[in-house]
Length: 540
View (spheres, rainbow, N blue to C red):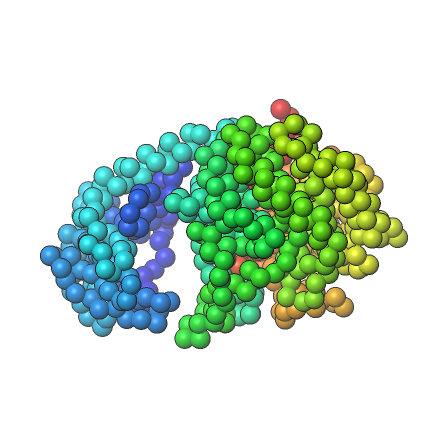
């Protein structure tokens, strides 16, 4: 039939991931509670339908498909439970409501009055295993709320915008695969960066960069356990082979992420192709060494217990960088055009060497201190010489280019140059002038004009939310605090009704675009809130 109407109201219950949606109908009001219990074993999704007022007739329709909609499962009943099986997968439906099958769909019709609660649980299990244990929806709800309550209590941030910060932290935690500590960039694939366009990517992987900056935010707000688990994940993923460091891995550290197109799917609002896997896994992005080293450095500085292999890995990464930092790469934005000498990549190579020099200076590890101090100076010298346009007083996207790039906003945040350096201020002002949309948000780089081919793709994209937060950070660092706060509040206003952000904002259509929710947008939200608080933006 036709899809159900959108809820009249929805919210997360307090600081949790338990979602409540309410519908007002002519016959009364009904509430639907959806959550996934944090647990070992089979993943579960629990839905509790609760009557609030009146008597409301309800219908539940469950249409299970596997392999991205390609495979219709065999649905049958076992001991009063409904199970759908296809190849290696099985999904079990448990409910006290009566169910019936029709048109390859499992239906249930029932009525709820005030205080009635009817639960539906689906559990996934490998199809060759014993059936999963019978769920206990009400107990699972209590346990889930307790889990989030307890987790949020560890948050050390109590400044302004705490609700936005805590919601972002919960989102980052939800993007973490507990069994391995891997952190995905987003839980979705192929949500378009331009509606109807071709920029549709699969983000259900662990990018070292995104994971490293996620880790930094968690560490700054008191979450050391997640940091330790991610460090373990990193050591397993990279293994003994830093020469072949990938920019991204699967959530368990898998290296093979072949990209494919699912031609039978129409795509989100007809945006094709629908892609799974990600061909960017084979790219060379030298900045990743910097983000990983910075995360390990921060873990060390915040007193995370030493891990000798982590220190060994850090030294190995720098030895690799020493040989390769001066080569062109694909850069932070995974451009599918030719390799270049991206300024941001070189700055992050400097960060990697700088943090390792500091580690050796602290006496915790041994390494060629003098040689690496010289290397640090050499990289710094080259960037200031070849990556800076003296006529326009701004750093540029790559050596010899005239183009700007929003990643240059990270120069003062990484300590490469002090915020009051005239070259830094010039860069911030140039980006504000040339990469801002009418509403003051920031594009990653020009996708129109003479250098539009940098990413090797056709079409445009929205303003990149992370870059817009970076601009707010930089404005605060150079003392333009009111402007920073205004931009930050404008960015907060783009969040959806649940406080979530995607990757980009389409100024033309006034909507969020790209994969959702996106770690790379929630991390800088947290960082900017922390920086604004530290910069005294609130008079104390």
